[in-house]
Amino acid sequence: MTGTEIEITADLVRDLLQEQHPDLAGLAIREVAGGWGNHMWRLGDELAVRMQRMDPTPELQLKERRWLPVLAPRLPLPVPTPVRFGEPSERFPKHWTVMTWVPGEPLDHASISRGAHAADTLAGFLRALHAEAPPEAPVATDRGAHPRNCTDGFENFCQAVALDGIADDVRAVWDDAVAAPEWEGPPVWVHGDLHPANVVVSHGTLSGIIDFGDMFAGDPAWDLAAAWVLLPAGTASRFFDMYAYADEAAIRRTRGLAAMKSLFLMLMGQNGDRGLPGGKPNWGPAGRAALDRVLKGV
Image 1: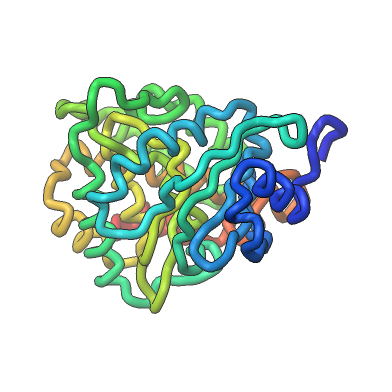
Image 2 (image 1 turned 120 degrees about the horizontal axis):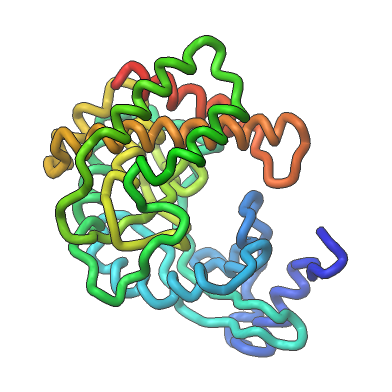
């Protein structure tokens, strides 16, 4: 925490609720581990408070406030839906939002044991989400582009992560994605940040999707990469069969993006092992396992 940051505590959360939503201030408040851009607190059994922390602007929270109530009713898995807005004040000069709590354990602290069920569930969720977005839908600024426009980021990850003799194989997957045709359909709703900390599992399968701050309208390949990033080995083919709308070009782009996302997870794990801010030690093994699935195409 820098000298300009405000320490977010349970007392602060309760004070803010008392000021702006006093009917909720009596509920139990419990800190939720993890999070980077936002700090999460459980509020009673069914709600959570999402406090803007490292995000430099409120754009991501405001995006969730605007669009999640539109998307949630048509999605087949629970997603966090805003129910109250917390506005900047003298006590806390940033945005905060009271949202519905999505029960389950984040995948970066759990595992999927029912792979076929999870593949079907994820495919059904993404089919429902990937509807044509309206003209006023947000457009991505740092993701969502064709892989050829993301080569600098891919190269940075390759340089930062030890690939132990598989660098040529990883680059071959990426080069194939770069050479793949572009998405030719209309922009569709895309979650944009499907990784193990942004999905929750219960009873061995996917049970909810969280953190829609990066959602945008664009190429669904950015979400389809979850077939390798999230699902156990051997289930990607089933996922694509159930999803049914990914052609060969989309799968080529998807596989390259999955490789890049895997490298990102490995880098975050490496940073965690080194004790760097924002590092996640348990993401390293998850990223390497995902990269193995990408290279094997399973």
